[in-house]
Length: 144
Image 1 (cartoon, rainbow, N blue to C red):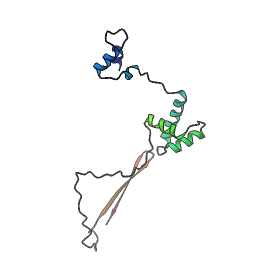
Image 2 (image 1 turned 30 degrees about the vertical axis):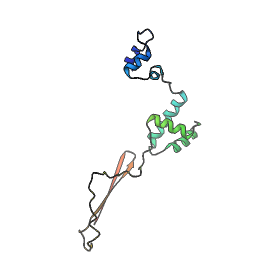
Image 3 (image 1 turned 120 degrees about the vertical axis):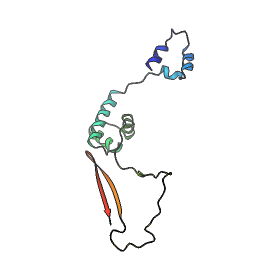
Image 4 (image 1 turned 45 degrees about the vertical axis):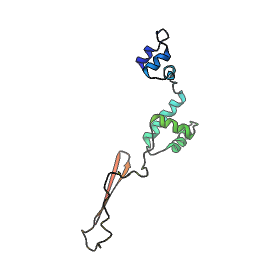
């Protein structure tokens, strides 16, 4: 945008409207001046960052309660907006984390017909990941 600001000057022979049309920009982008965040929001955002690092699984409701205990009168929507601006989100398992790809072939169930009456005939396995403070824990279960 620094290059564009040099072009958009009142003394330039082309009008700003014509310059915007040539560059494919809207005129509102030329006149827009970003508004800095209020100092109070910066204090709350700093505290949100600290709380999120201590407890990454907390969401906007828990963070709002903690901020109110710390003496910051904030509502949940404000906390959500600031979290979104900072790119923060609670870390927890989401529903439907495994969505099958439509191009993959679905194998038929081979356990419906034959009877399992001896060991080492049918196996099953499951892998579960638990988020921990420093990474994750992997739990593997194998059934015979």
